[in-house]
Image (cartoon, rainbow, N blue to C red; front, side, top):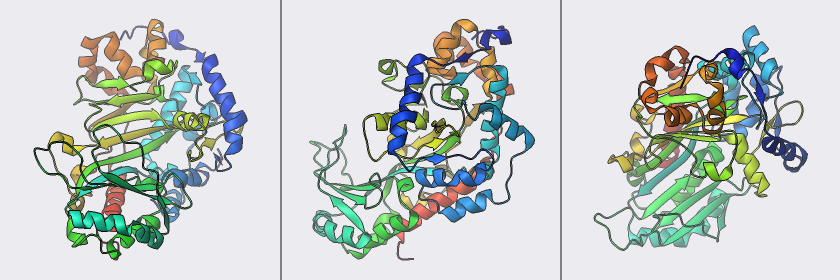
Length: 439
């Protein structure tokens, strides 16, 4: 990308008519039907943000969030930046004025450097693992499913989820929270693959811990253990193969195009959502760093995803966070998807909290939004549509290969120590609640 353009080249606010419709629809219809949306108090963000964090990460107790924000306050620079962008930090609104970019930069860097101030606890978003059980144990699980559900205080859903590509299970048992319809635990049982070079574990469990409180989570696995369906339960859960675990954080009050991330180890695999072109949006909503079939990092607009769910009348959509005008505030998720089995590795549940699995920020760099000032006006639309890194790769592959030296002065500080400490705790808790729920 060229970097000789003046600041005036990019000194404009861009809001497209199509995105304005998204905002108006959200504020006039979708939001009225969801009483669980949460208004953010600009004068007391640390405490007013906790209900939103709890809505999106129930696995972390409220007392943990309260301890994080206790006696935390924003400094004058942070408060000034908040006032600059607060009302305009909504989906479809992107300002590329230098003063706005500086405000975005201040708020993003604050969330990365001081996660406690923002109650910004890592989220264990998905946890998939397989357990080596016998056919007899599989049949016992199916027979005892209703009893397990009753003891755990959850529903048993008869309708199976839609079968995904490369899923060869014979049957599926779905458990669902009585209070939170999007909190489900799936048991995929058996194997209908026509041929296998090697045998596979015939119980696959998929759960999103963030949708469950830790007490619900622990209670469910206690009911599973006490059912006696799985013999030598503790040993088998210790040795369960973890096929996927996703860690994430949510960054507030900035459009996705200003959240510029990179991994030096990734040479080619930068892309948008598979339906990016079909959606025909003028502003980027998803950027993937790495091979989508293996471990990768994804950045996406959480707010846009929730609005799309509401547009489809999905009653289980999550809460939005609102500004003083009751418009949804932009929230973006940084998520590390770990699929180590596809890379020839076999992590087990007992090792879930080892340092090698605490990989949310592994080799990840995040850059200051002021980097967008270097974009020539001819390339602004592409950067807004695809994101800086994807647009840079498309525009000038030679510059993309040599990008590290150019980007380095814009690199932000990430408080790895604080985030790693929280990651370890949440992974350790999940592991212990599954392996030893009676402790």
